[in-house]
Amino acid sequence: MYKKIKVYGVPTCPFCKMAKEFFKGKGFDFEDLDVSVNQDLAKEMIKKSGQMSVPVIEIDGEIIIGFDKKKIEALIRS
Amino acid sequence: MKKIYDLVIIGAGPAGITAAVYSARKKMDPLVITKDIGGQASLSGDIQNYTGYQFITGPELAIKFEEHMRKFNFEIKENEEVKELISKKGTFLVKTDNDNYQAKTVIVASGKRSRELGVTGEREFRNKGLTYCATCDGPLFAGRDVAVIGGGNSALDAALQLTKIANKIYVINITDNLTGDGIMREKIRADDKVSIFNNSRVKEILGDSFVQAIKIEEDKEEKMLDVQGIFVEIGLIPNSDFASYLEKNERKEIIVNQRNETNIPGIFAAGDVTNVPEKQIIIAAGEGAKAVLSAFRYLSTRK
Image (cartoon, rainbow over all chains, first blue to last red; front, side, top):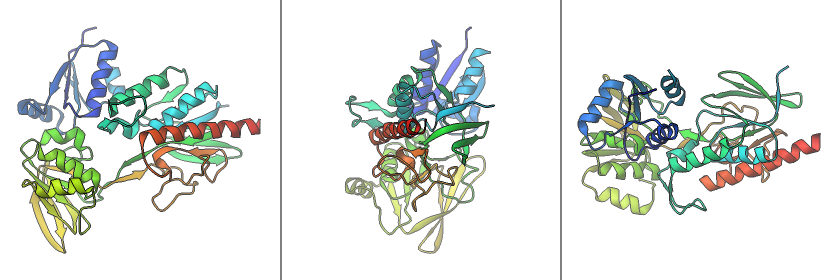
């Protein structure tokens, strides 16, 4: 089933890489958003998640803070 | 009657995963209980000293470890935290935040975590400006004023990373001089963006929804610094609290001998949670292998 997935992250962050590898491994397409080069994206991420750590993952409008595998799996299965 | 495992491994960093792989090959039927996979290795930047990889990043190595572990079909309980380890008539009881497990042998490989400041505002502003991972969250503070807490290598490394990103960097150091490597100390002192506060301790973190300021005490004088980011880099502490019956040193590291045996026969420990000299990925992995071989020997003499 199609899911709209966004990964807000920075290139140096370990859990951002893990999250992206996770989606690639499962064959899901996602938008790879680098908040270190785009301040507007950073603001958007902080506004949506109410906090400042990366990664922030958005799946069909639902926000997940951090690489929380359980929550991600629940959302991509639903 | 609940199943009794040959071996329960607590933790899935380099030590725990290596132990799991070795034990699966020995047909020991292990159970791995862990909060996360990869441990501190997954937080490392560039790794150039893990044999076989001339260059690999921490997350990539952690993914390789995980793939290797999942090749076997033993049980892995992820996102589960061990709360208590109890010795019980020749077997061991592992209590987690979710369930209880029984085992004939246990390997504690729970690693270390970032030390906290223990000041007002720290919990409240965690991930709201306050972070323990400069590599992760540093880039979000472009053009901002930030404070780095600590004076050792990890603090100086964080401060140097931030000189490329942030506007002003305050280094808050509790001793009378920075203690990190000479090359980094020189670079930090030469950088106009950096101000160093020695003999200084953090008193409080302040803000509304996000961090706005930090209160410090420098030579008994209180100062308020306006910052939007705070990077805590004051070292690591072992995840050993649940193992209250095991002997530990003054740093709370579990004391093991050359065979990774603890003071309780049947419980072994490996990696950064122990008093092994040098905390390195490759050393932790080797220790995990040693611990399993000892556990295997222990089981075979008791059958």
